[in-house]
Image (cartoon, rainbow, N blue to C red; front, side):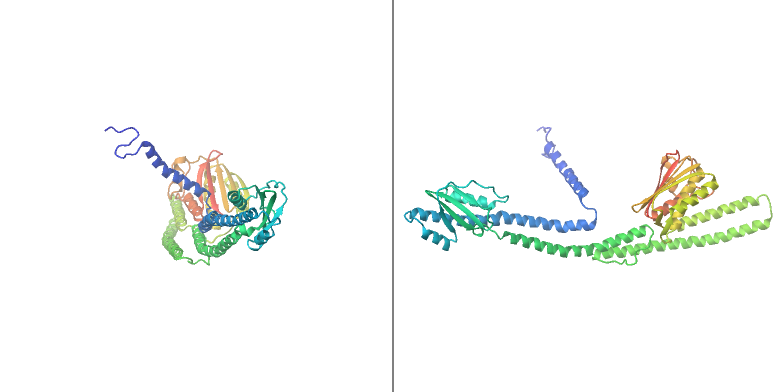
Length: 469
């Protein structure tokens, strides 16, 4: 039997059904993306929603069921009983028409039925008044009078809040009945709502502080991890607290931090020892060259030794970094003044601008080295350098533009790799090791920031330094 176009072989599903099944996961993913877009981003706010939303939903369902079933049902039954009493009074009046003043009927209605009954002249009934906004009593009572009595009537449920007035048109007279609202209406419903809302508020007052105490250790752990990522000391009062999972994460973070610091110390100690040994050898070389006299190759050998010493210092600085330095105040304006002096000595054109606070909270020596490596690289290969710094909202943004030869776009990430030197355009350090920008990015990232390269409006290279400060 041939398979139609609308049915896939071996499945029995039409093409439309297949498309519908495939669209369901996509719609579900779009829904959750929309929810995540408007959801709070902080853990405390999301936890409050997790606690409060089910409570509100549960109370809404309970209140709806109570209003729809219990309150409406009780009101209807009370109204039925009240209208049944009024119908009984009308039946007695029609059964004993010779009792002109109906004194006994009025007495029985007041003593037994708790209804205040009056007989009025046969005037037309008043015009219908405005119904209240929430008119469950008005609707139920009107329906019961129409069903049980089926005569012209007029009711007032808006006037006196405790009394409901009912008028029924009879032959040659008008029956007026005053009924207490509680006889025809379930008036104690607000007590249920008050208890429901009150208990919810009490539960929330207990749950919110407890939830805050559970989330505080997580926030403290996040703050400690962020401080460590920025190279700052860990908060003094930090210790693992809270639930077992949070404490385990805290202990794991402390152990990880200790292992990293121990590895850095071991690497630094090893390189320091190597550097000391090599410096001793280089010092002996210099001494021997000094004793060798003034031969022609002595100057070249001294230059080689100076280059080796410079390279050694660069290796050590890159390996050591500046992680052990404490954070402090760094004056940008004073640093820009020093840059101006250096630009004059190098015969370079320098312009600097500063927007925001001049003081930034960084590791001063490390940050000065970062700026010197990047701006010194611009001085070396450009004639004009513009430095623009913006400090605000906890972030420092420094933009360095120059008119030098620039770096090709596909090589800009390579210059941040250790020991990489470009054959064309820029050379990171003509007499160095190719570690200038590597050290600069390492310092920036140890502060929690980064360095990026782009095209400059001046025609050369733009370096953007962004760090929390």
